Image 1 (tube, rainbow, N blue to C red):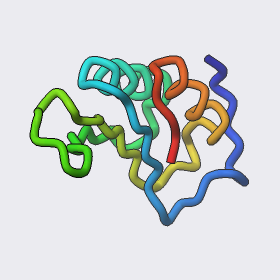
Image 2 (tube, one colour):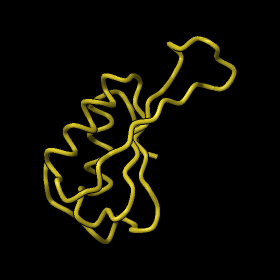
Image 3 (cartoon, helix red, strand yellow):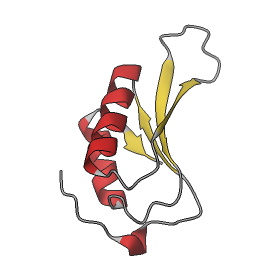
Image 4 (cartoon, rainbow, N blue to C red):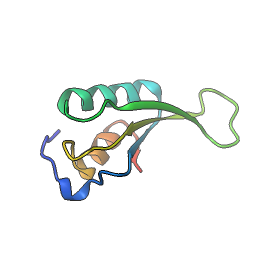
Amino acid sequence: MQTHTHPADLSDDEPLVLVLPDRDAAEAVAEQLAEEYPALPEPELHREALAGEDDAEDAQWLVVLTPPLSAGPSRAVLAALAAEHEGWLE
């Protein structure tokens, strides 16, 4: 993963959300981001149940990056990282 930053494509007033299929993927992504971008605020993990689903297995996990994000990876790098774990960037 590249560690180049592109401040112009990151907003410092809105969080970025990586949507991942399970907790293990979310934890792996959060750990990787914390290691590679120590200047970023610590990523937050949230479980999001899918609409209409009662089964705990039917949940997505969110890695939320809160501002300031200018010291972090570009949106393209975040999208690629999410895709590596079968997720996406919102």
